[in-house]
Image (cartoon, rainbow, N blue to C red):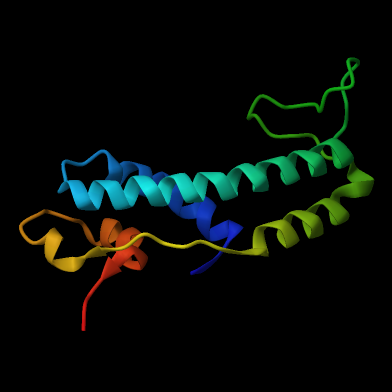
Length: 128
């Protein structure tokens, strides 16, 4: 399945939250495998994002990117437009993930919220 980096970033937290639930072992295994695949892609995203930070952020006296009290990078004013464009380009990149699926029947009897179902949707094999 194809996902954008933005989609992966938006869903990893909820996916980790669902992984903490007591679920059948086949579901837990599928979630764990998929988290591992998403994290692998996000590692690549984070390395590329860091390159952009190094390129566009103001530096402190030690040559490190400046970070404010809200843990945000100080982007050079003259580079803000390029930063925004490059970050949007990076977020919009599509990645292919071989999603590990499980049968919808395994969810029978388990309390899954609509938000959790939405996160699990791409992993559920509804059969034919």
